[in-house]
Image (cartoon, rainbow, N blue to C red):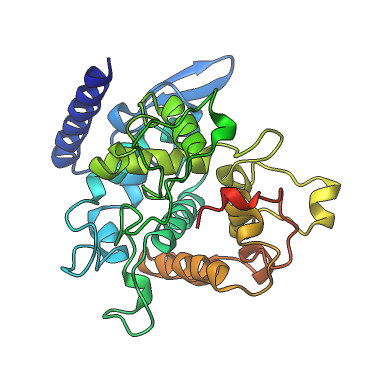
Length: 318
């Protein structure tokens, strides 16, 4: 079964790469109306009769040359994942989530901003850039696909009945939004129908899967009764009175709160927070949107936000 799943992923990737190579213009969607609602199917990239597939899909507005511009230094010899990450892997992974609104929720501008925000997180978390790096520190996203020198194996025995650690396996950071700890590998693997608990190395072997795990995390609430990063960014989430008092508002800042909680947010003007913001603004510029579309400071930052939840020290992931 495990072998079949890996072959299915490989064949699906090859089919989508062939479709991408042959497609020179936007695919005209199939359309039907169900109970007064317009639903569309746009083939390989947005399949399954969704209202979101009636909108432009990611490949309509974000293409190979833009991906190359954003991650210009990822294949430089000094990078640590040379030849691993590419546009085809990203767009193949995104195809699974576009029917659910990833990069397809609204108009073109909103969709481009979401892709820039998601990739801003990715670029920040996988960068090996520094102040005087060639091309500048923001050009080095996707430099890594795994933690290079893990200090521990990240096995939490509290989850020994639900996500038991596999002997000899290390659950250090891997992927586009690096995953840490056995329970996170287990939960992500269940969602993607891949045995990541026993084989976490799959995330450093397959770039499509590495992007899929990151987009799944973006689209899925970390905890019950909390929004997803996607929902807080695109405006699906409506803050409660308590959220307002906690200074949590829709936008990039609250995506950091959702994904990292008190590791990044409520810490004042921190480097880790500013690094994500800087990547987002840089990517908006490179994608032709412009950082002036990013919104005001309180939308971008989470420096004064109360974290959704306080992480136990054992769960720190960066």
